[in-house]
Every structure is written in structure tokens, then in C-alpha cells.
Image (cartoon, rainbow, N blue to C red):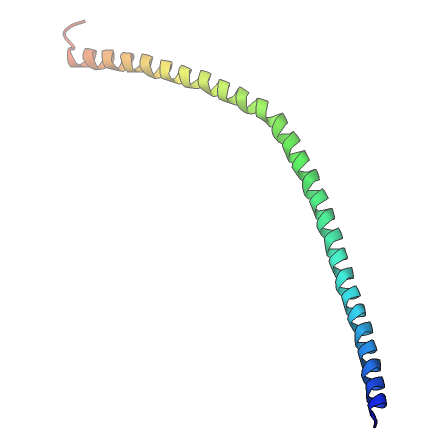
Length: 102
């Protein structure tokens, strides 16, 4: 085989290699585009869920404040009740300790 024949075959092989590389890069690019589309769709779903979650939190938030206010009232009532029970208990203990006074 002479130099021209050898150069011809190398050129032909190189051309097929370029074609193979372009095809391979096309496949990689196509996979990347599909992945990017999936990620974009996933991002949209996450944004939608985040908005729904945010709306739910906005609805619940005032109720949380109302519950806290209700708890403050309940705590005050329990403290009041505890103090009055404490006074009654102390007076009962004093009365039990001194049965002659009365």
C-alpha cells in the first residue's frame, strides 16, 4: 500500500470517528436535556408544594396565636387556683394541728 492509499484510509477512518463522536455527543446532550427537563418539572412541583405549605402555615399561624393566648389565660387560672388551694390547705393544716382552737 502506498502513501496515498494509507492517507485515504486514515482520512476515511477519521471521518467515521468524527461521525461517531458527533452521534455520541448528541446522545449525551439529549440525556442532559431530558434530565434538565425533569429537574425543571421537579422544581415547579416543589415551588407549588412550597406555596401550598406557605398558605397552610398562614392559615394556621393566627390559630397558633389564639392558642397561646388561651394558654396564657389557662396558666393564670391554674396559678390562681393553686394559690387559693394552697391557702385552704394551709388553713386546714393549722386547724388540724390546733383542734382546741376553733
